Length: 280
Image 1 (cartoon, rainbow, N blue to C red):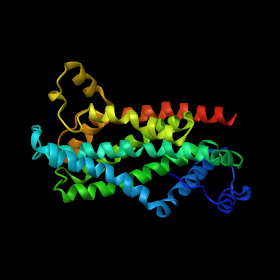
Image 2: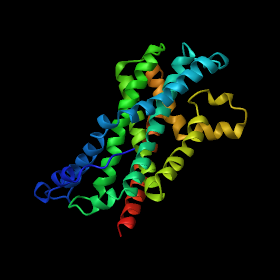
Image 3: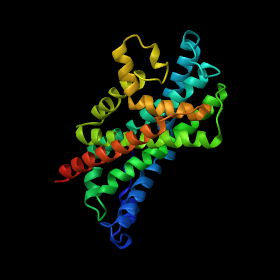
């Protein structure tokens, strides 16, 4: 899912004369942005990757809106099921999009590209930071496409534009936290195929045992409702849904931010430690 840059490009980007203070904060930022740019430059040469990444959430939209929509009761406070559904699809899209991180890291490792980066005079942490940042940008591109599809199906921002922008930023920030989870997975598996399976398998229960598609009060078992309500994916979905529809999100926004920050702090530490262990 990634392409290896040509040696001439790498040598130019990371020539020792061009890198000053790679061990300092400025060096880390510079190297991270350079590494992120490398991944983003691949997109125009591999546009089908974005196309296939967009097809999946579009299929979920069509499935739930046209096949299951008539059988699902629209919760109170929403004009129709699409206004309830679309924020859940948006949240699912950015969660699934975070899988690019684990797959990309695993592919770079299998091709020996990570070893090549380690030999360069760059901040080692920039390898993971650059990857996660580029995948958030990739996620944002997919999100814009999904938003256009949603508008074609009748979805509207029933709240303020500021609230809609806040909801979008919250979803992307949450996806950045998940990218660090995926980074650890990508560093822990032995192949791209394993990264693909390990990166996706845990995302299905957290997205479906949630409020993404139905009100959690309609779940059959009390214990399952408890799990769904405590699910961080439910919190970010509820927060985004409220902001898009002009409703009061309550404490869902702050809870979602805390979950995202917690994931970034914990899994950035674990992924960096794993990366250093591999380096050794």
